Image (tube, rainbow, N blue to C red; front, side, top):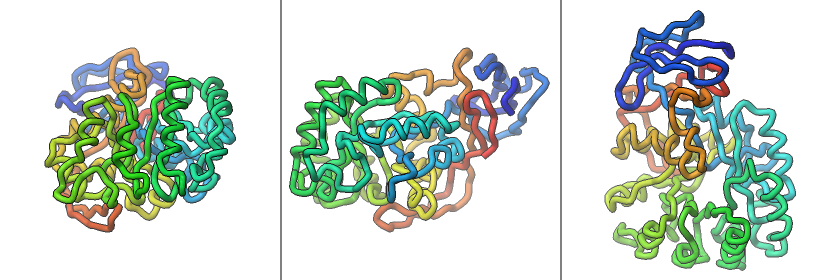
Length: 367
């Protein structure tokens, strides 16, 4: 359905039940439920929430690269996500190919540019410093500025090899030269996590912050590291980036107990963890945070308002008359569901989020 239509009886996060009229791919009217008029209607009945279209700040949408690749629409609108940000799958060499693929997708695609020109063509892309070519990076960032939202540096032992912290020092320089923030992947050391934290600045994104590896952000007693708290105070943004190996229920509970909250919830989704878990979908990841005790509003804000603000595209995070019609519809169902983290630990939750459909670019699609 791509013409004008009315979405009836949807519930906003503030509790209001409304009808939303879509005309010419934009939100034309938001009125109390039952007051919307139009020839074509989608009646959701009761209990279906509507939010602005979900945004996933950490995905891998370049299907050619294995293991970290997938098709944009498979990890995008088909799972309730209307905007995805590819987290450094491509560097300067293949960025044009990623953008070409994105133009053929319904899902809106933005990207972090990998600081290695080869991107994830191989998974130790920062082990050879000659691949960190600043001139090529600058050319790509300038040529595709409408797509590029930042630079991606994967700073863990398997990626940097014997180079330690040096790739991040180079990334910091690239960031200053281009004016683009960093998304920094953390994992096993070396380098030591404290070395990484010292180089992060305001508006950088620290992804995988809830990983359960030995080199993580909490000490043996579960308290946050002092340099982690200093980074938060500087304005470093915390992103979940669940992935195959980067989300631990235990670490997430330590963070919550310490009062450390996520800025954004993202999946780090690609074909393997979409089909075989433990990620599966954004709805599955969000449900884990309901289980951890966060409110529905906190959870949904982390995939709407918060990433839209970081992206400097506030219109992507709101439901307002005049804005482009990109919406996600979902329910919160009271049924026991078992979820698994990246460590293999399972927890049984009483509630789960289920996606029902999206409006993307003014088109309603049932999921």
